[in-house]
Length: 227
Ligand code: CA
Image (tube, rainbow, N blue to C red; front, top):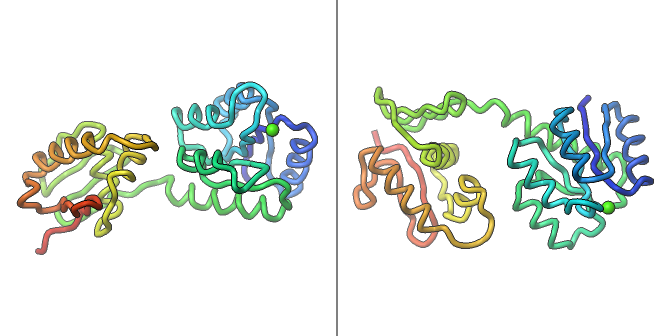
């Protein structure tokens, strides 16, 4: 059972969602406006939020960005159209999934369970070790061998992102979206600058990489050096 918050202005849809989710064994609270929904999200600390994009006071995207500014509560967007560009925008802005009206309670429940499963598997992040590097996201400490690294918040987030996907090329756009929470265009210079600071702290350079390998025109790959 999860505690769910439904933010939906249409009274009939709201009532049917509350009934369906209650029948599925969830505890449900609800809000008819964006502002009331935000307040409820802060007060009640729900496990997951079902968010309608078309709300009378605040646009659903604003609600989402305010939620994302304060935490990582899972959010499923509820929309009337699946080709809606605003759905893409919401997913880019950190929504976890979406569902198109009208939907069955079985489908809604399946989406909720999938999102909650992902959220719980990522909620207790473990220390990542790659070669001599170890990065503990809980204490936000990174070490190289027995040396603690003195990283800024961005440098830490950048290193953690790259290490959590070690062996994969991470694009600068993904970095901007994950570390800077910036979805649209620009900012690649910022990534380059932070990468060069991070390299210096790891004791390497772009021309003589140890962990951080630039893949020209694509992005960055963090790899353990050959032992
Ligand atoms: Ca609506």
